[in-house]
Image 1 (cartoon, rainbow, N blue to C red):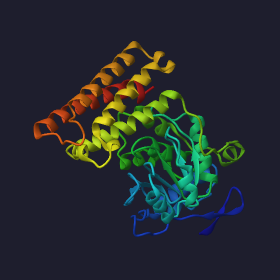
Image 2 (cartoon, rainbow, N blue to C red):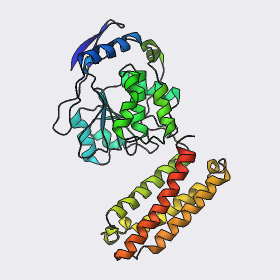
Image 3 (tube, rainbow, N blue to C red):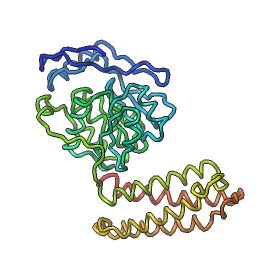
Image 4 (tube, rainbow, N blue to C red):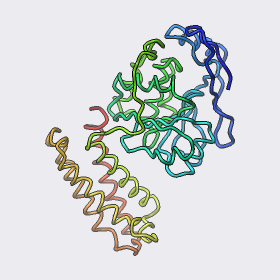
Length: 341
């Protein structure tokens, strides 16, 4: 850690640089010209609080227990959900001090606290990031103890968009580099709302961020439909993992790992979503697609052999086909109702 002079505030501000750990690749340094341009942009937009010369290009980081980590700035990493003690230990080894979740799921505050890490919950959807949320994220990356790890579920869509927009708004990243973060993270261009949010973000003057009052909470309430989608996504992911493993999990040691059980749960998720008042406010097509997906989940469950028997080769092909049909319907629904609304 070293102090960097802030021309606007007239104070020395601690500079937190990520440690050069063997568990991930260090951020690439930028050319002196690029550093000067970045510094000038940050000066004009509210003050050079952090050392622009240390801000490298967005880069993937190698990690054993964290999904899709991307270095956005020496102070900010984007990535996926940290699950289990090994993931939180890896974050601590990276030097991370604050975890910011933009996911709808409840953060694992207890495990984070066990490793001395603070959790902050600032969720947003796949359809974009409200301007008010961008400012809250910007204040977080400027003022909370860092480095910060900003995550969603997979670390490919919401979190890189949030990290990029936050760093631009906070004056840590020039707007010209904002979309590069999404490219490095592998964000799907179909998430038009996220791309639009990042593209339109501009630096917020430092004095405005200082005056902004934000109650940084460990957990915040999310709408029932969002909670239902989080649960559905987790179950769906387990079925996709079973398919990738040739459905061998049907012979797992515990019934909770049985794909047929997960298919039952998936069907129930769709049923519960159909009961929500939020769902009824969508066009009728939305409910129809949910019913079609629920029927596919039931067929998948019926075609899976009774646990712990394993499916035949022909059976595996049939199961893969059924899961692809379910995936296609989910993608169609997401594109219409989740990614751009």
